[in-house]
Amino acid sequence: MSTATVRVPAKINLCLGVGPVREDGYHPLATVYQAVDLHDEVRATSRDDDAITVAVHSELDVRSESVLVPEDDDNLAVKAARLLRETTGVMTGVDLAIRKVIPVAGGMAGGSADAAAALVACNDVWATGLSRAELEEIAAQLGSDVPFLLHGGNAIGGGRGETISPVLARGSYHWVFAMAHEGLSTKAVYAEFDRLNDGSRVPDPVVPDALLAALRAGDAEALGDALSNDLTEAALSLRPELQDTLEIGIEAGALGAILSGSGPTALFLASDEQHSLDIAFALSSAAGCADVVQSRGPVTGARSTS
Ligand SMILES: C[C@@](CO)(OP(=O)(O)O)[C@H](O)COP(=O)(O)OP(=O)(O)OC[C@H]1O[C@@H](n2ccc(N)nc2=O)[C@H](O)[C@@H]1O
Ligand SMILES: Nc1ncnc2c1ncn2[C@@H]1O[C@H](COP(=O)(O)OP(=O)(O)O)[C@@H](O)[C@H]1O
Image 1 (tube, helix red, strand yellow):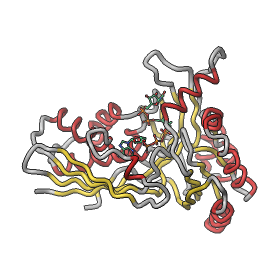
Image 2 (spheres, rainbow, N blue to C red):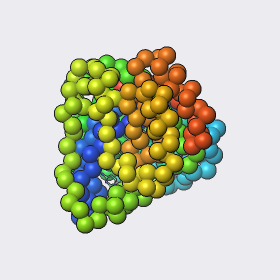
Image 3 (spheres, rainbow, N blue to C red):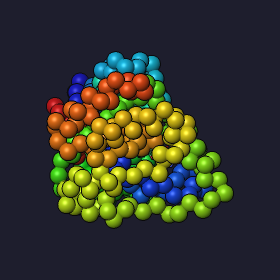
């Protein structure tokens, strides 16, 4: 019996440009991902038979997350293990144990993170020996943002989010995350984006030059000004009260404030540790805010800890 434990970060999108819906139902993206210091952990233990099981232990006390996360074949970590097994021809099973810290359906890619971690952990316990590049190919079949969670750091996401390319970036940033009481479905937010844009011409998405320049310079103030998210209007249309959360952070002096991916988590950029504490304090009494977390980014992608 062999065991591997993998730590995997959440992601945020510093910009999220969304283009017109494609024929396959996905949207072309121009995004810059950043991996942040908020981690799930996936432990894989090989079995004598061919079963694949999963157990979820939630570290979040704000919502009963373990109820929302499937503990069966619908769990993205199980899907990842199955796809790795099909691809490599392995016959052995595995028990997966997930320690969940990343908010569920929060726009921070928690499910995708667990899928990325399961790929790394199973590649280890099954000794399948796939390279990072080979794992990234499997990751893209599991979800649009799974390849980035293997990669970590900062990266440009193209295609439907699954193609990762390097970005020149400097600096470590202080973030504050405001978690909402209830998650938002990614699919529903993209559908709302289409509904709101019905009849208008949606331009092809681009990564703003100002954002790339801010990252190159490691300039937090310029980065705060350049943060953007094309899904904002759609997410706010489904959850109007998120506007209040964003405004509280802005009033508290955040350098920038946007929703994380499809929301509902709101993210705020601070200039330093003390500033981040002040913003977190202001948000902690906001009605729409279930929890506030201070974090740093960028951090590395899915990595083995054992
Ligand atoms: C919005 C983003 C921004 O990074 O993140 P989250 O807010 O979910 O964390 C991503 O695009 C989420 O990627 P991911 O969660 O991997 O999505 P997938 O599983 O591939 O797709 C779920 C559904 O979202 C829609 N979808 C996803 C990606 C994309 N480029 N266009 C889409 O229209 C499709 O309706 C799809 O059926
Ligand atoms: N391991 C997992 N962790 C979280 N959610 C999962 C997992 N496996 C499947 N899901 C499903 O995926 C949905 C989206 O989850 P998540 O990745 O956390 O959100 P988002 O797409 O907003 O970043 C959840 O509602 C849940 O039902």
